[in-house]
Length: 436
Ligand code: DLL
Image (cartoon, rainbow, N blue to C red; front, side, top):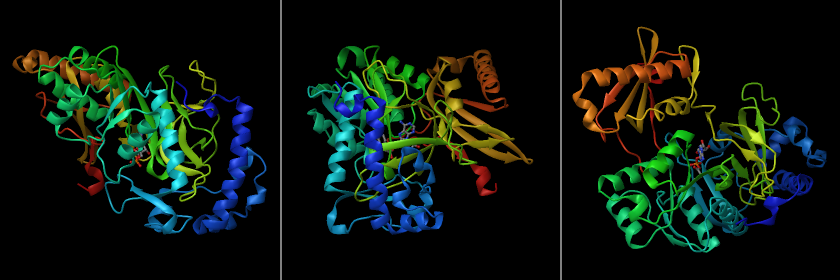
């Protein structure tokens, strides 16, 4: 089901809506958003200079650093009394990024999440278990509200407490699971470990995953755990932009449809800031349209992707963004080679003897970068055979060498010995930054 007709408009009409809303948004943020007005004045651009979508490029960027500088709510364009909700980003260091919503913002947000839920196949018949952690993270309450808008019955489970998760899935006839991809895989393993066959004994047929990336091999792994019938999509969002609800995959699985009547995407070269044409890989920059509490123009997401504008077989005409291939800032430079954790994951998940859990450790030894990847064996039968382990280790190293052009150290460990994550997985430890 397609939730809103705006998802299917001819390109000319989408752009007409975008231009109209862009002009209003720029005027609004210039009048009410003090930090952004200062940037526009410094760049010598006025709201009336925005006459076409092409004029977007005249506007200055907004950065995560702007939120830090104006912490907690200096970026807001409305007074506190107009807010109905706060959320905050899941930042791991320093102060979080605080975001706010007016009543109207919240309605638009949840409606956009409803669109994404429908892209992934959700209907009012579904029983949806939300296994994102509740709290200031936008994921749980965002998907919760979006799925309720669709009419699904929502179970606000939160993450953790695996036994209860599985009991509810069984007893309530859960048909739809919301989680980070890594947590969904973990739950799948726990289900298998309890002798439950997800394909036969459970009714979960849809996975709406997001908050972190899901590579194609990871999706294959999901099917192994949850069954071939499982419709497994991912969606993308960011607290600053609203949370989830920015883009989502439809069941054609050809990229994530962006809700373009509310978000204008651009792709830039993160170094030169040059705008790149459709199909080229670069940093996603997003302008939010019509937001009241936290209007954002040309926000540098740091996420790397490509955009495609051809209409999709599903009937949607909105622009699609490819799986995120990493963040401009989680790119590691190892002995001069640019490495993204997703590249490593792609190699690992194609090797059947190892499970989907891994850790990447980067250290500097004798002035040389050394990358050690710890991977879990899929089952413990291999532990008895040194020859087999040795062969496996060599095969993993060769796969990584051909993908990255780099030699790596591999550490094989017993099944279930690496840490599991309930929210976003933290798989990379880069000790070089600490000067060690
Ligand atoms: O993760 C919002 C969200 C929640 C989206 C639930 C989808 C589902 P933040 O905590 O602010 O917001 O983190 C945003 O997470 O810049 C990406 O780097 C990463 N991210 C989110 N979704 C995906 C995805 C939410 N599908 C940051 N693929 C973003 C890859 C993703 N990375």
